[in-house]
Image 1: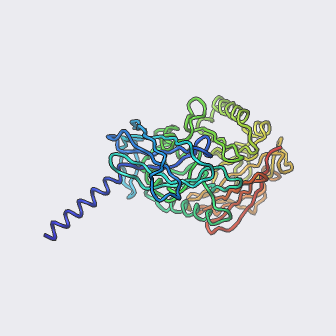
Image 2: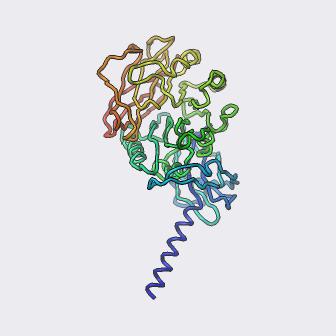
Length: 422
């Protein structure tokens, strides 16, 4: 009899595990206007083609007054049959034939904490949370380059721990801004799926840019922005070929413009991106204008010019307040720059690139050695070498932005103030 009960119990547990797998890869993504709406991304087994999302103020104990939306899923095989690795380091081909859902829920109240969940085929997902924009003063966490990789979970842990460390500094943050390379191989769906189970993806709205690692498969057998696009549900207000990858949104007094370096390697690609940025700025006036991409503005080791050389003239023309990037794994912040010269705060663009945060793929350089290039422009650099973990706290009011670089222990390493560009 005991054996029979054990078999029944194991079957029940197996069934529960299977039920949990019906809805996965859930995340809240910024909408074009996160003050009154939010985008959501999730997936189900391909046999399921309809799901319901429920969104309610977090203060409500139940879901009786939730906003409900029935959403149809589309068949997605973007990640199917891609060569990858399991958590145990074994080679395998991803088997990913899913229904992918993108939903946008509106009529939300500004500066309000919400909870959300997904219901599909009789199953109910875990509960997630987000906060709408609208506060006069708010904060965000900025992080990049933690290269989530199933065989080395320590990378993800280091990145997620860094997010929590940022959360202990100053004003509690409301959302997370990532600057790319949050996966090792964006084509490996299992990497995204496991990443979205991490607590910070359940508790905050995320917004980010496509990094070169997010854009690739193992051994670079395929590179496409579809991996980044289908892993989230970002606004479709970009330009041709970049819908859901390049996008813009307004969070309080800040216009964020998100770029994709992988389609800007040619002069033609750069011109298309710059024409779009100019159009977005002209049509969306804002006190602060922030442009985000993945590739670094300067090379942190010697100060040589990188993407700064391609973008600074346009940023001068458009009055961009802040330019954010990652990729180089060495933190760099500059003085305000205009026409290639250091200027007074508020009269130029501040350029910042984040350090890596995976405690494994950082870059070493001699920070005591004088820079051979752009020494007058660069205010501060930082790296811990190969084992680097860092992130930033961003606090915004109508008067100024304060960006604080923190190490893994929460030690303040650099503070940069950014003012509305005059």
